[in-house]
Amino acid sequence: MTALRDEENIRLTRSDHTITAEAATETLAKELDVAVGAPLLVIDCQLYAAGPYAVATGRLVFRPDVLCLTASADPALSAPRQAGAFGLTALTPRPPGPPAEQPTRRQGE
Image 1 (cartoon, one colour):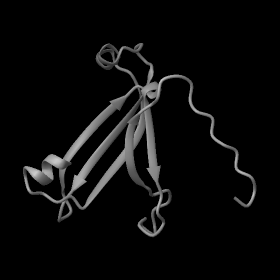
Image 2: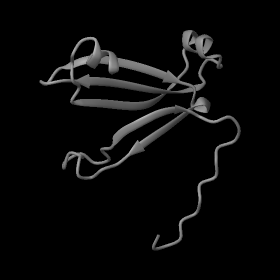
Image 3: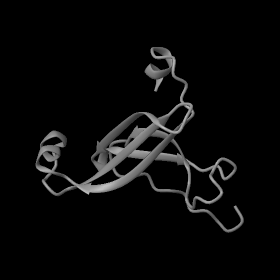
Image 4: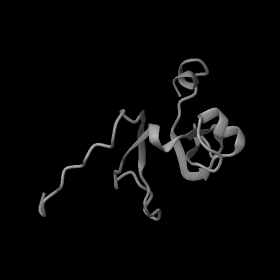
């Protein structure tokens, strides 16, 4: 996104992401060092500037054991008719080792 802004002088106004799970094809299995048919996380994204048409699209494919997806929800920014709308904030590598245990919240916190 920085290249679009800095090199092409395109100011992005929105990005849409669709996240799905897919089975690894023979090609992806070889590239990602997984078994054919192993589950993969796929993120398809579209980047928008002024106007209704995407200025860039992309497809990212990850092994689920090496990805940590962080999302932030802001109801004020979500479309009123869209259930489950959220803003994607970061894609970061998953730290090595077992997943961190999440603290338990007590009622009222």
